[in-house]
Length: 203
Image 1 (spheres, helix red, strand yellow):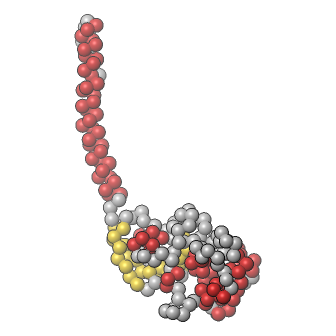
Image 2: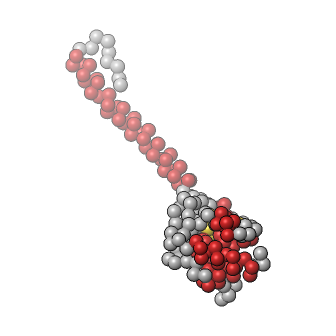
Image 3: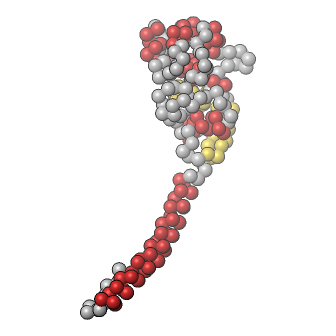
């Protein structure tokens, strides 16, 4: 605010005070414009596309993605591999489980850029052509699904469970499959399917 001159009359003081917001407003407008320009530039930088090379089910894909895109969204929205499901989006249900270099990961918590250079396997890449993977066949045989929504994640987690050496008993299977939730409650059949498939997988 502009300071009134010493000894100014009441009228002069009010006139000076009334003009101060206009000056301050003009300055704020200029500064605000600079701030908006900086914010816009920052958003453009933060949201700029990055080139990501993903190897999924043996095929290489080059994608231009926002660096914040998760692996599950890259698979579903950019590659059309909708077998990988989005459940809770918080890493708590396991529906989005895929293999990254043979290790099960939650693709909703994995950034696509973090998967660059890795071998990603989804449910679409588990079978050998028309021949189902032993775990897929066991899930069918033992009716280890109902609505089927969690099934892709269950199967990929089950394959990893066996390969990790954590399928020695029903209790161990339940422990190491506990991160995959089945809202239909097909857990008994899932355990039976894993027990069946592990012998065919050479475990």
